Each structure stands twice: as C-alpha cells, then as structure tokens.
Length: 141
Length: 109
Image 1 (spheres, each protein chain N blue to C red):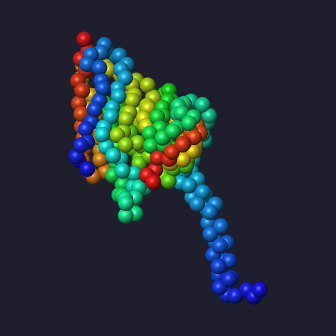
Image 2: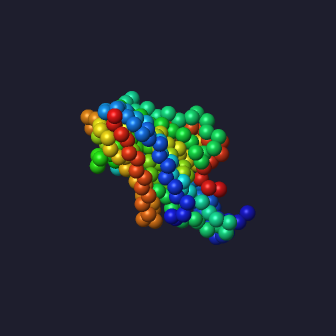
Image 3: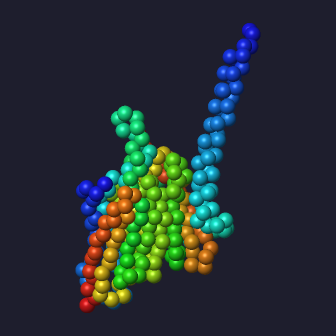
C-alpha cells in the first residue's frame, strides 16, 4: 500500500487528537491548581483542621448537600475537581459568625473529588477532600 | 432576572444576649450555569447570584462568593452570635446587577 499525502495528513491529525485527550484532563487540573494557588498563595496545605461532609453517593448531581467546617477559620474555599469550572464557592466568616461552618447544596457534573481548603486562624491552610459518586450529573444535558 | 426571585430566611424572633442561633436561608433563583444549551443548541448565558452576605448591626456574619456550581435556589445554613437586640440584613447580589435584601429583627429579652 502506498502512503499518500492524504493518509499522512490523517495520521497526523489522529495523533494530534490522541495527544489532546490527556491535555484536556491536564487543563482541568491546572484550573484547580490555579484556584488553590489564588486562595493560598502557594502556602503549604496541612491535613486536618477542616471537615467536609458530603454524601458518598449522590443520586442527583444537581443538588448535592455539603457541609464544611473549620473551627477558627476565616475563609473556606470549596472546589469540585471534575466540574467544567472547579470553583464552587468561597465562605468568609465575620466576627459575628458563631461557628465556622456552613452548609449548602452544590452541582456535580460527574463522580469526582470535592475539595475544601480552609484558611485557619494562624494564617496556615488546611485541606480535605472526599469522593462523591454521582449517578446523574448535574450540568445541564 | 428579577421575576419570581423570593428570598426566605429562618431566624428565631427572640434570643438571649450572646446566644448562638442557627440561620437558614433560601432564595428562589434558577442559577443558570452558562453550561446548558437550549433546544437549538445555543449556549444559555450564565445568570447566577454571585454573592450572598449576612450582617448584623453592620458587622459581618458570613460573606459567600457563589459560582455556577451552587445549585438552583441557593440554600445556606450557618450559625450566628446575637450580641444584643438588632436586625440581621441578608443581601443577595445577582449577575444582572439586581440586589435582593431581606431583614429579620431579633429581640434580646
């Protein structure tokens, strides 16, 4: 079989498409890292000090109840690693907040890790994450 | 998107000084994520509430930055300290510039 100019082109395109696949995943990771960097300013993230409560299995990704808690924290950032846009919300607690907890409902496009990062009293940061299995995604469609 | 947006908050009417009270808030809003497409395949533009704040006597209780990943009819639950009689002011900021507010007065006996 002779390799024509057209075949070569097609091969090249195929290879490019293949190479682009992991690139997409990388972009999502880069988005999360950028969001974390923006919040922490590249500070070290300790384990513990922040609690994230989310269901193990969410039947409907459109409303997944979550609760974040970090005693003494001034701010808590919530991210969803597998969403088109990883940012979910940012909670800042004022002087009249009796406790540093908040609960809300979020959208999850697919099964993924939900991440909570808290800025603690002493200026350090704590991180936690939990995987939520999503039966029906909550991103339009 | 000012039609049908109705804030609802649950705050106790009375408290003792320094008491910790639980507050629940809900506002009816579609929180259009900007990811969905209409029947013709056109992207529906994003239209969400992007900020929610609670203040008591000018002091902040909570200040939340919302992203499209917050579910429609955003719901929040949190705790506040009541130092004295006063009013909680709840404010929601819409992408389209609308601002919705709700007030609740708490009496310290």
